Amino acid sequence: MPVLAWILAACLAGGLISVLLASVVAFRVQARLVPVLVSYAVGALLGAVFLDIVPHLFEETKDPGATASLILAGLLGFFVLEKLLLWRHHHGGGEEGEGVPGHAHGHDHDAGRSGWMIIVGDSFHNFTDGVIIAGAFLADVRLGVVTAAAIVAHEIPQEVGDFLVLLNSGFSKARALALNAASSLAAVAGALLGYFTLSAAQEWVPRILAIAAAGMLYVAVADLIPGLQRRTRLAETVAQVAFIGLGILTLWGVHVALGHRH
Image (cartoon, rainbow, N blue to C red; front, side, top):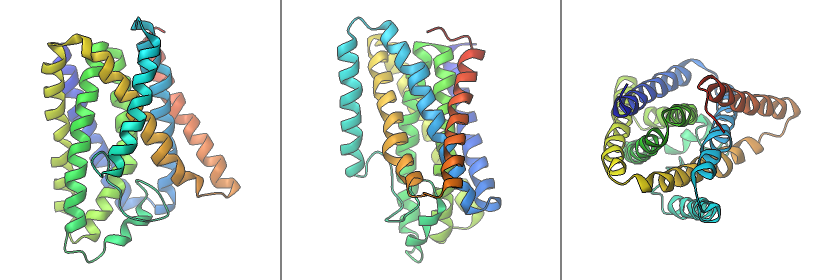
């Protein structure tokens, strides 16, 4: 199958899966179980970064120091962008962390303003994910599959929070689902831009992957993990560690199944 077809299929399927699962979770799963999804997402992101993307980069590069420096610069860049509210949206000053419904309540009765902010922020986020997925597939189809899987895994808990913010902003269930689905299509636009731009400039693919690794690492460590750390009971901690391990194991399984070489 052509690389472009893989990229488009990954973006469309990933967006559909994350939005539908998020809507099911938002309606049917108790809020206390959402951190389980967050823990799984952390493991999936860390597994993709350290089992696939980073080893691939260091195998291919002639200058490991420059690659490591780019990842470091990416981490700092995402910190700055988050501060400027351009990279990822936050739902307010809640105590549950990104993607956990507990902090959606801060946006009640805001005439829909926070809901539209969520849609704009999520569209930008998805557009960037599309570029990242395109870069990964252009480097290696197997790497692209793993990267897309990790992105979907971390999108699900985030989309749960987004969905509840939209509902609390006054959107109907049908409209919230439709807007979330529409924002997921931004990944296709990002993927097309990434494909045609990076195909003409293959030397940029490793740089995009380094930035992707930094972004995924930043989401896991700076955003998702702090929300989990606030839950300190032993049973919760054991569950978190177990599901982080399961997320890593899942990505390792994908890695092995696809025969990705180190």
